[in-house]
Amino acid sequence: MSYPLLHTLFCFLLLLPFSTVAQTNGTVDVGASITAGDNSSTPWLSASQDFAFGFKKLQDNNLFLLSIWYYKIPDRTIVWYANEGVPVSAGSKVGITAGKGLVLSDPQGRELWSSTPIRNLVAHGFMNDTGNFELVDGGSVNVWESFKDPTDTLLPTQIMESRGVLFSRQSEKNFSRGRFQLRLLGDGNLVLNTRDLDTNFAYDAYYWSDTYDGVNVTNRGYQVIFNETGYIFVLKRSNQRVVLGPTTVLPSGDNYYRATLDFDGVLTLYYHPKTENANPKTWTALWFEPDNICVGIIASQGRGACGFNSICTIDDYKRPNCSCPERFSLLDPNDKYGDCKSSFTPSCEEDDHKSSNGDLYDLSVLIDTDWPLSDSAQLKPYSEEMCRNACLQDCFCAVAILRVLANFRVVPPTSVLVPTKTVPYRAVPDQNGACDVLCRSVLVPCPPGPFDTSRQEADAGDFLPFYSLF
Image 1 (cartoon, helix red, strand yellow):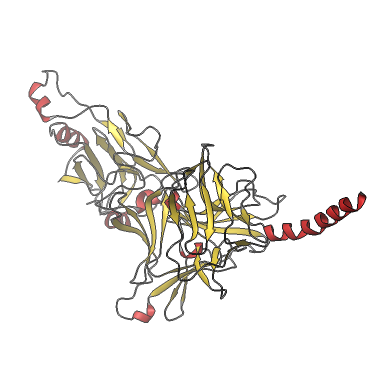
Image 2: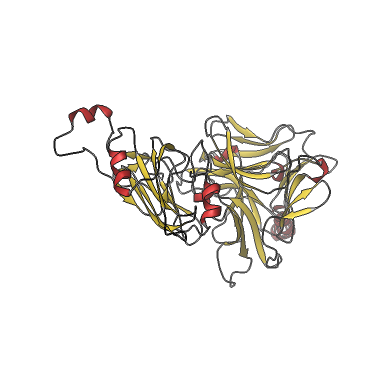
């Protein structure tokens, strides 16, 4: 009576270690699957357990994102996601098939996303310790990998080829494709740009790597390489390296690294200690571009770092803060980076019904603020009072910007007048003490929106032409 029991125990003790190894060596068999919201359905881990592939629960507990994330650190940062960042409900499933590779389906079994097209039949999947999920054929050749289909993040050992692209998220918690792109263009330049969400039209770049050569094709960039030691560079066809990040980094053996195009449009290289008792216990920025995105995005089309009619200021961490001017409010209260709408509607018809006491509108003053590339008129020389009156008497004027100039040298601060704003600047008089006063009026809408110039340290000789203010 006791022998069958001993035999059962013996088999169990032998099989347990082999089962554990199968779950932690990174290899995933064809036919394996994970179900969102099923606690018995565990993610597929890399051998080191640094990375996990599976369904990550979002803030809304009923929604899950098929993704890859850092498994060992407390916040379990997501570095890749499927289905263009669109989450799925509990009961959705991802599995590996021989013909399509990874297949994501909803609770009713309808296919939502797959890793097709793939070249050959898949033999197995593999969660690599680099964070790359790979589909491998019978000849041990990768037929698909997440590194070749990036989302908003690059990891060490990852390479972006020519015409590759990263998309930012729409917000910190919304993983759908956002307004910002990182692209390695065919001409060799690595650029950051905004885009139109509906058409995907790319607006003007607000950062570029200067790795373009219009004459010598071999001197153009063709790969962005994030090497295993934490350095990022553009590799030219001549094998010259143009380093993008810092010249020194912390030891990669002690730290995790990632380069992410954040939802606010800033490309940032982060590090995070691997050990729990190290400091800091969070992601820390080592390098980022641009240095000031508020003034970096100066374009005649599309939004800036903030929405239309929103004022952009840079905080102590070089991140944009967006705020609506007085008597304006967010069009979408849940999107603080979005457009601002007026609480009143200016109308030329109202000018016909002005009271004998004066204007129906007044001007609010915003210090160290500018609204570039939206001028309808430039009036010079003009005093502040003349500038104010000119705007109030023009029913199409939304903003009056006052600048005091001397030898084209402008030093913050100065002042601005608006039914929305006024820009102040302190003039640096020339030897004769003479100053010019320029008044600019702006029509609505006013893309790409105003920015705060109080952090701007460029002298006027550089400042004026760069921002195309005049």
